[in-house]
Amino acid sequence: AQKITQTQPGMFVQEKEAVTLDCTYDTSDPSYGLFWYKQPSSGEMIFLIYQGSYDQQNATEGRYSLNFQKARKSANLVISASQLGDSAMYFCAMRLTGNQFYFGTGTSLTVIP
Amino acid sequence: GAVVSQHPSRVICKSGTSVKIECRSLDFQATTMFWYRQFPKQSLMLMATSNEGSKATYEQGVEKDKFLINHASLTLSTLTVTSAHPEDSSFYICSARGLGRSSYNEQFFGPGTRLTVL
Image (cartoon, rainbow over all chains, first blue to last red; front, side):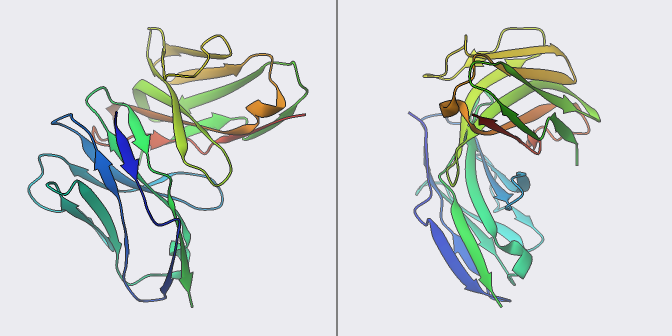
């Protein structure tokens, strides 16, 4: 069975500081993709960053970086220089070879001014 | 990025009625569309995967006769909640992947439809 685990239901970070949101996954598929999405209170899902299972380097997109540790099956999201607008739910997701996406339970991030 | 729309954004209906939710890819051809359900403060649960022109593949535990999915064209998929009951009240989100402007590695989400069944 495929599984995505986010162990932090809620996180707080001071504005302008960096924060790491944890994500571990479990799959027997050799090929998979890992994603992070942001969901503000409006409900829309916003794509942040992608890491392929065969990618050698950690993905980066602006203030977002993905700390991919394949042997440990972890794909943590690092947000640098947090902004008030970063307050939202964050979901880690895994795409398998059948193109299905499976989501973690999410982490609620609150940025404190 | 690519744009996916959903209609309606909110719907309130009486128990026993059927509700249709549309998901459209506006600037690319969506060969695959996904339907998710999200309860308050919970994660997105994949309900089904639909490929254009073929029958949807439902996840385990999802009633295919209750949640009818049609993906008749490369830009439109519909989810019909038949004989809706209060326990069907939820946030329904579609996403799409395919040709054109969308990246192979991404799926683009619609803004969601909040269904309330009285």
